[in-house]
Length: 81
Image (cartoon, rainbow, N blue to C red; front, side, top):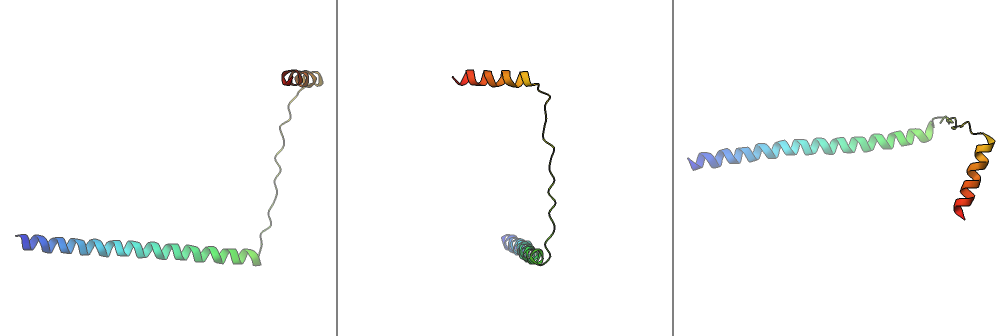
C-alpha cells in the first residue's frame, strides 16, 4: 500500500516538474523574443524615423471682463499683505 503511494507521489512530482519546466522555458523564450523584437524595432526606428505630429490643444479662455480682472488682482494683492 505505501509502496504504491510512494510510486504515485514520485510520478506526481515528476509530472509537476515537467509541467513547470515547460512553462518556465516558454516564458524564457517569450522574454528573449520580446527583447529581440524591441531591439529590432529600435534599430529600424533609427533607419526609418517616423514623423511626429505636434497637436496643440486650444487653451481655455474665460469671458472675464476687465473690471473683474482688476478686482481679482486687487483682492490678491490685499490678501498677500
